[in-house]
Length: 348
Image (cartoon, rainbow, N blue to C red; front, side, top):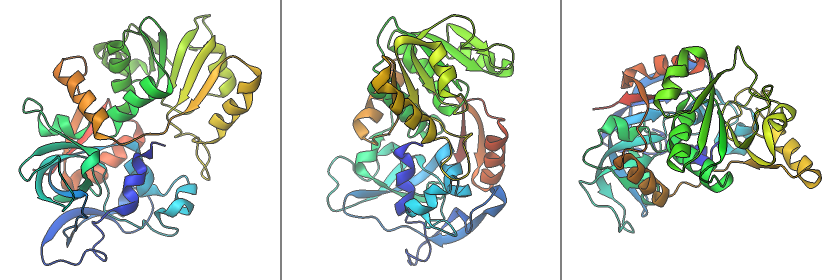
């Protein structure tokens, strides 16, 4: 689980906590559950803190963190402060692009009228609050839809490869779950760092992986990425359903596994902790390295991603765009695996 989920802990879209005369439309989850719990409602606009800005949302990205906040799974999330019986902060959404309409007293880098992208709080709404240090300026050449899908997924891919994985030019990199939001970015970013990339995905999405720049594609339904004798210097596991023993068979003797996804674990802790703990327990006895990814939501890395996009080395991988009232359908498509890259919620 990316630390991007932490942004959800202080959503100001909570109508009970932000009682103001001005109202807005927002996608609200009044209880944990499937997409059926989501409803478009009129709520009070959020109030911003001194280090925050208010963004007029033009588009928002849908990522797995939002799905976890909606379902309340794994249950450990509820004990971590997100609400035991229902979401503590019911307005959904983290990734955002839009225009700054109000700035806090301590904001110095952004001004009213700036077009921005990054991570906000309750972004499936007409307005959302965001910390200044979690936003970057949007390039004029980038559409709001493209900018909306950078904040969480691209940041996760960059930091998991560069910081946790220490990727270097010439390395063999295996990306499991290469057709998802993080995976499609990871393929492109690994290539930008000069790596040789093998993508693991379904046959139906192999063309997407190749279009992102993958040198090789493995159809997980027909081929075992750990069974062909090929070894990788770095494995980025975005899917979360491979046993540590299987990952080790595909890993070079001094290679590194970075655990990014954990969607297929149990309902209590999910796959976010069990496999990394196994890897950490093994490390004193093997030369292979295991790392659990933890996101750092900082504007400097968002600006680095903007540079890669402007240089043509990274393209935001948009699959489809939904209106604000279509968030439940988008969540269902995400859960069913009917996604190639990223989905956008248009709030224009």
